Figure 1: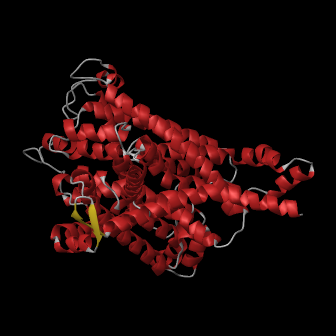
Figure 2: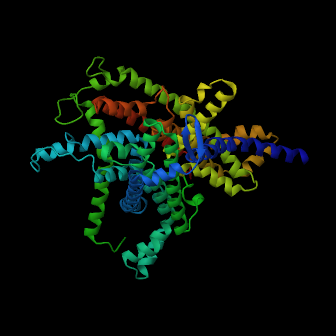
Figure 3: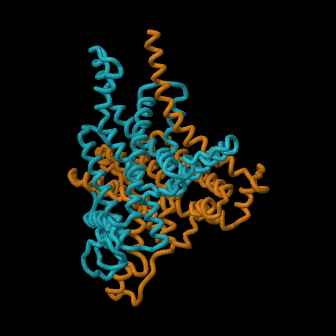
Length: 290
Length: 285
């Protein structure tokens, strides 16, 4: 018996080691690293002091906190739009479509997921730029007299971002709605509920874990996205991850870059935490459902 | 819904169709212009050509003769394989750890396992870069030796992608392991097999569809990753970085459309394999 429990203990240690190495070396320590770096102020060549200077710089430079604010507002807007765009599609796939079509539609939804962000953004560029397909078609049909530039504005950034992330809303929604018994909806109607009441009182509460999961992933991906806003927004994109890149790679000011990174992380974590808190869900029963 | 009026139903169907057109449009545009016989990926259509794939002369140098793009593809492939192998291995360990073992603060560690999924990729990139370079500087100051492998390059790219992809592989494999009937293992043990043999002949074969699916998913995510890679890349740039570079320096050229086609065909094939493998699972999602 003693040998058996020793063996069990050994197995636990063997399984725990890779987990701990992964989490400590690649997640915990690196984040302590950027937090530490963000509190360092350069006072001379290779000389650093602890201070809040980087955070004060951030507050004193309107461009920086405006960019964060703008990123925050657009990300929340994109997340909400994504929910409204994606919910009917998810409901259609899970509940309305006939069995045979259901799988095919779900697969269709997934295909863009497996194509790089870069290809998707490139596709939008080919479509929307001044010499692009949409502009060409509009001219050919006589609706406009000269080429129209549809890139480099906020609407395009939002459309492109919604496109990049909508699948991450649809997939969790389909899996939760799939588990909903149709008789629940019928019972709602039989009891005299209007369509809106059934949606509000039965379908949405049932889909809540899926909605929260989609919300968290979509929001995080949007706020942390880089390619779509930079490529579709051009010089006007003013996206916070771009600032991080500029500080790190272009200006080689790692202290400022780390500070921005910490701020972005605090911001996204707060929204994720609020989302979980307000909906009464936990990370384990929303995001962790493959 | 039975009470739905005909008009509302038509609007709903129409919306679904419009949505799928929206999904397909940029991919179709990116793909189509790879076959246009023009120096720019734009209208008018000048006829069909395969030059952007196979031509070996400038200005229409095709993908399969473009050394830099091919090198990018080559690095992406090896990075993907390494990330996939590493994350499936650690993912399997994690699945057994959380499905089979009990230990103190298990919930806390479970949440720790999920957290990499909700950290923006850019931040994973910079934080690993910062840690690696402070290790390099520390070693250099103390021992006067510079560990080049911790400078931005292949190893850091692999580690950066591995850091969040492992969460995904862990969840996929754990979901399958949860459905496993432990009595099957007990039966094998009663028949005299030792633990290692049971694992090898009963449990792992049962997990195989999930292991393959997790591996394919890990490979694809690694292959298309940009945000984390951007900060950790050295001189051996994978395809997404090479492509982005080309886009920034040369502007859009149809050779990028051709790369897009190659990528779409490649990912579709792999995704199809993963779907077919999972289809054997009777109750698998």
